[in-house]
Length: 130
Image 1 (tube, helix red, strand yellow):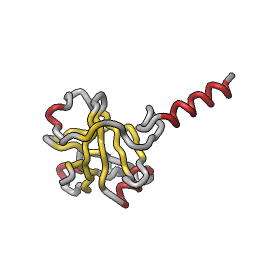
Image 2: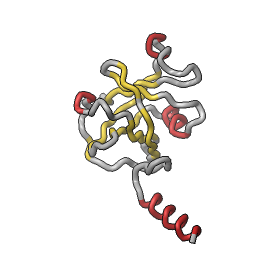
Image 3: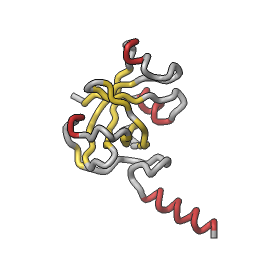
Image 4: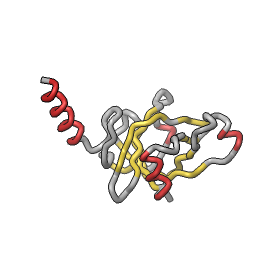
């Protein structure tokens, strides 16, 4: 019985294009729209992040709002961060939204921002692609 449940769960997760809970996924589905943080509910603190445009890899993760900007703080060993180091182009979809935003990451070195994160984390700002 456990074997059947695991098999069904594996088929279900494999059939998802975006990430599913803690399991990574592929391309995030949805129409592309211009980025506008003002339309995102202030209670939302999770987004789907898609990296590696040639072979999409996506995860669910928390993000931080500081002023008008959003930030993520990966640990060095995260697979998705390794993709970002190779290519900073990403796509995001906020929790509960149906649209996807084309963004890119920028490393943050401003001490006023970096000091708000744990010392062992890398701080990245998400900005719309131009």
